[in-house]
Image (cartoon, rainbow, N blue to C red):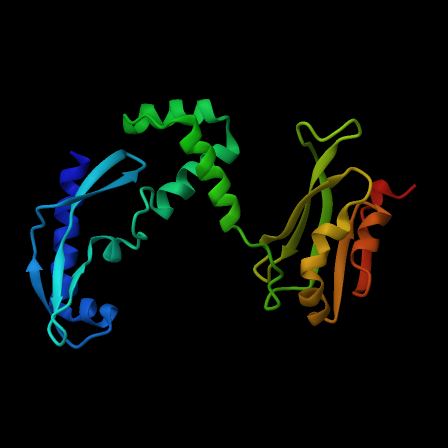
Length: 234
């Protein structure tokens, strides 16, 4: 089963880290010895394939005699955290692209595991908190700014939409430099405010828009060479 395979792989890499000295380096000491290489006590971790239990491997620092449990350290999982970041991102990204019930159904089909709707919701929120939009000063100074027209539920009588700032990369691909929710007319200052310092560092930018003058108000103070979409110019 999945848990058995993960346990075998985990034991292998733990012993390799011990043999090569990487484990001692990670712990900031010269040498460590096994206190228990099998682990009788277990720690439970939520994966995309469901909850698994892994052995609590323990080492002893040679210089101080201090004992250290290394299971979560080697996996990069914080202490007392049930769901690792990789599982949070997997469920969070799926939850952002489909309804939570669909995510739960698809996950159960492919992994034979049931996730609660609240677990998926928490993963979506945590994944959103991890995303940090910014301008990459090493890429090109060409940007596209436009409202997506995607409405936001329960956003009032006049409604709000998702607004996006995309930066063209030197390899001709694009990256999302900024994103915010605002009114259909206006609301661009909220998107540009945290990015103004980085935009000014580019000295000047080429901004492709649909002719919405509110976008220009959001980038006040930045030298803009404006290029408008011809289909929107009367």
